[in-house]
Image (cartoon, rainbow over all chains, first blue to last red; front, side):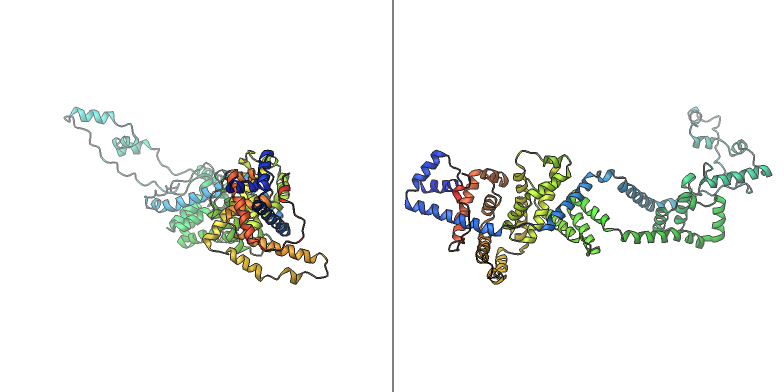
Length: 346
Length: 197
């Protein structure tokens, strides 16, 4: 047996992993004193190492088990949750934020569009209709082609409008008349009923905000738009109270208040929900640590390590004296390591 | 593990209770740093939690568990090298600055001297382990601390059994040099060739 073969089998012999024939062959080699000495030296080393290891044998810190089991419990809760994009609690505020952002971006454009004047109410006479562009009928001597074209057209509303003379259109409308007292009372009562149901089916005229349940929000949005400040618009949308509470009593009430109070009054209306929002922000900053812990662990369980690290850091900064801070620190360490770790291939 | 995979939360507590101590000692011998060992122990079990759904019982659970621990240790050691954090020498330095057990153990205790010698031997062993290359150290610790057969170690470190045995042999030769002249107290230790017989 060569020296190399002897060394290769030395470990097997020490750990009893040689079969009968190999063992016998190896023990024959041990008759040589230098090989016997080498074996004894290895045995002594191993014996010393084992004695040292026995002296170093220790129990893990007792708190570790609790921390591990706590972390497992927490992660089990997180894993049981649906993916983030399916969670109602996540998607709703995200949609709200997206809607607010979209609105804030689109709001100035909407302001640039010509706004329809409010239609006159009962006591006002309708403004005269804009004069329709005069359409000169094709002369009899015009080419038949152009005549045919004109006859063939006229299916779209615009073209019908172009073809119809303004006088004809006026004749087609029902004649405006002063309302009878009974009708006026009915109309007022209908308005009141509509207000009681947040607008109901009595949609306000165009330009007065959207009808139905969105009336309040529509009106608030309009007021915010009047301020021409996207932030204010966003605030008023985000903080618009339930329709019934915030909706103006009726379009006419709203117009009256605008007329009476003007811009100063409007800014007051906007500033109140803004203050509520500010107090809401304060409340958000004082969120319980559990919420942050859950967020951090969600990030960690989804292997979003950088977000998890940030969340744990925020948690430890805000609640450094919490009794679970040690556990969070440990989880922060784990997340930090995972951030730089090579993917595990067990 | 299969019970835990099926949702039995108590099974996880059982797994922790069963494997916590050997794993802790493995990590302590591997890292020489109690704080890192704590982090690594927690992280190992957290990896078990995260991988529970995809766990395939193709090997023994403990092999899988120690593979996770070993990989984390490797990553940790790599991180330490890159960060140039505490070196192994620093650990030794810290140990040498610490009060000796002879200074703290009461002389009235009849077994005190024996324990002191054993403790000092432990310190020497820690230094010897720290001096081993990582590949040899992990094999040595897995074999001697975790009592894993070479076949399982080979699975855990993703090497052939012959390679593992070869690393063990080099580790023993290095330990022999490192522990030369260390006085061995009269503590019962297993005879090397009685391990498997």
